[in-house]
Image (cartoon, rainbow, N blue to C red):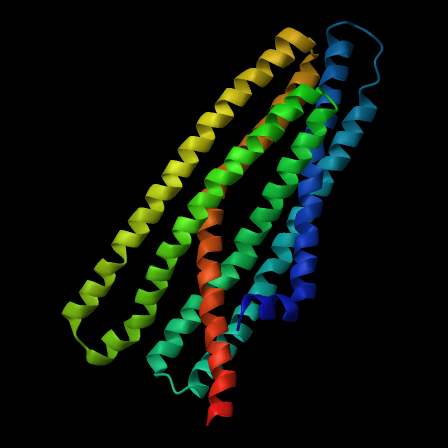
Length: 297
């Protein structure tokens, strides 16, 4: 069962959960703006002794915050049932397809285990990808309202960050294929009941996972060095050039941290994408074989 087939069959359930994620994300993205306005109102009221109405900014901020909470709660509420059912259905389908080809039972179980990576992608990685995309785009758009130069600096770094992580994804995809190949060979080792060979199987998993970790560490380090330079430039613009108020500086720094924070998840996301790409190719080939073999016979 391929990625496209799963998305087609469960499009409504996946779409509903992603809508909840998007509601949570949008509320979280705009929250710093309203908290910054609340901060400025409180400072003017308590320190400058001006008759500033801080209650309206307070209620608006609380409302936005509660929207974030509701979106997050609904997403977490329905996630368990939806993805548990999805795993049960997809694993059963994969085992049935494997059985129709005459595979050993042990290999069917290995294939069912590989399906967990599909479910983990939909449950964890897809919401993370949506969050990274919406948070990065939202942060850049929000920064345009404070100073277009800050937004342009962040926009400029997207290209090298994307290049580094795409390079990482390509290398990791090759290594993920090696891992999946080893996993699918496990059934033969179990059938032979050779413990020394099984030990070698687990040792064979070490080199590709180690190389994946090295690529993830390299891409993470390069991106973080690029972003710290941007952070220093933006702070200089905020404090020395624009002379922003305390609330505006808070909002800009919050958006900047939101933009920078998304890079923490990119190596894991690239690893997951590489794994899903190989699984999709693997299951697509199996589906084609299933269609071709009856026609040939």
